[in-house]
Image 1 (tube, rainbow, N blue to C red):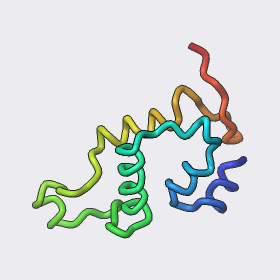
Image 2 (spheres, rainbow, N blue to C red; image 1 turned 60 degrees about the vertical axis):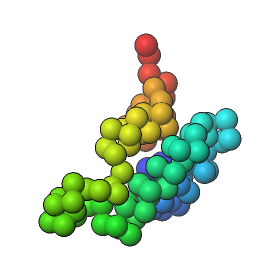
Image 3 (cartoon, one colour; image 1 turned 135 degrees about the vertical axis):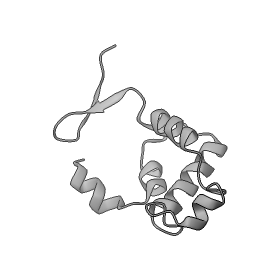
Length: 94
């Protein structure tokens, strides 16, 4: 599936994209799935993840997803795979 196919089929819906993975690749815990759902709501602009407000900063971004947790979640989902120039996944050597 190309990047354009992914964009067209899933848009910003990270949960929908994750749920479309083969069951054997759906390895998130219940807590991680909740984090993915929260990140999806932000990413789809329910909470405007792209443009924080002064209130968000003043409140210490309370309620926002933890960036370290999001990074760990991302690394778990994509694992040690990389994409080639066409967007296809290929196992990284080493």
